[in-house]
Amino acid sequence: MYSCTTPFGSLDLERYPPTRNPTLLPIDAADLYLLQSFADSAPEESERVLVVNDQFGALACALALGGREVISWGDSWLAARALHLNAERNGLAQRQIHFINSQELPAGPIDRVLLRVPKSLALLEDQLSRLRPLLGPQASVVAGAMIKHLPPSAGDLLARYVGPYQASLGWKKARLLAARFDAGLQPAEPRLATRYSLAETGIELCNLPGVFSRERLDIGTRAMLPCLPQGQGTRRIVDLGCGNGALGIAAAALNPEAQLTFVDESWAAVASARANFAAAFPGREAGFSVGDGLLDAPPASADLVLCNPPFHQQQVIGDEIAMRLFEQSRRALVPGGELWVVGNRHLGYHVKLRRFFSAVEQVGGSSKFVVLRAVV
Image (cartoon, rainbow, N blue to C red; front, side, top):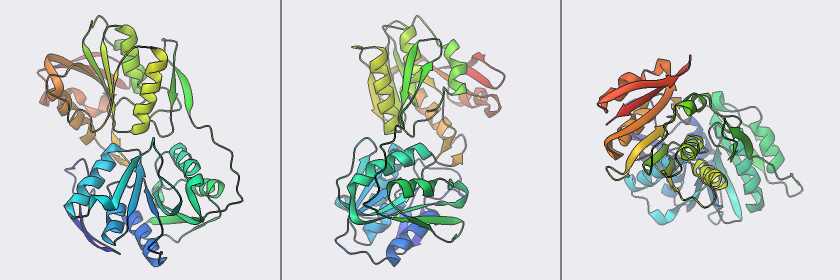
């Protein structure tokens, strides 16, 4: 639990998923800078406020603590879960905060936008282009980030889709970009979805903005594809952390009777995987789930799990997410079930997997990557 003071009062916040690293906090200077800028602007009570890409709910919770009704819009299920838990932790009424996932749109008009600049510029452009028609005539958009994570072209995108912007002075290594709505702008609708072929299958993959490895097939996935098992019959196969669905779709092509499920914490990723599977296998059914990996999967609900685990959450790099997925897979697999994992050799997954699985062996790889098979 981390107690912090905001311009609207004190909050008790936690990251989600929980972390063992005490230096990782659920709020940072960019959040506080955004909140202070909002408080200093003396907004009218009637103004409709939208928060975008709230990492752990700090922005929405602080505004709700100040009596505002807030709409929160984002692509991360984990961030949405953090928002819900932190709102509950601080006794905030659920009716004050309305979360909308990235594949839907909030209702307009919107007067104020507080936006955390995402890691993906394509996602930022997608969000700004979709927001523009929803902005009121006097709307303002204030985007914030830690300076080391703020792309130089973020301001250009604000100017293109919202209006003229000003960059703030740095404050505790954070910076804001504040733009005013310009009704005279007529930006062209961007074409941000990308396409490429899934190696040696003839299947084309489409990727929505913000999806992992949207420009080209990830090299870890490429290393794993030749190792995928065949002859699985009607076994239940899960593509865990599916992204655009590359591993699960390749496995489905090799195992035409298998039952596929695609899981990711990103709504855009699952939407991409759903569209790609439907295009590759018209009429074939599969399951699609947005959530915290296999946390809520019933025991013995999977026979085979395929995973190219992420090694970052937002800007933080580490193996906590991977370890969480390994443990979830162990609980969801049947006795004798298998988890197939690809990872950089230096990560030492072969050692870490032995904490949860009875046997671990290498089944393939490259000079940089190793593909491992772990058996329950």
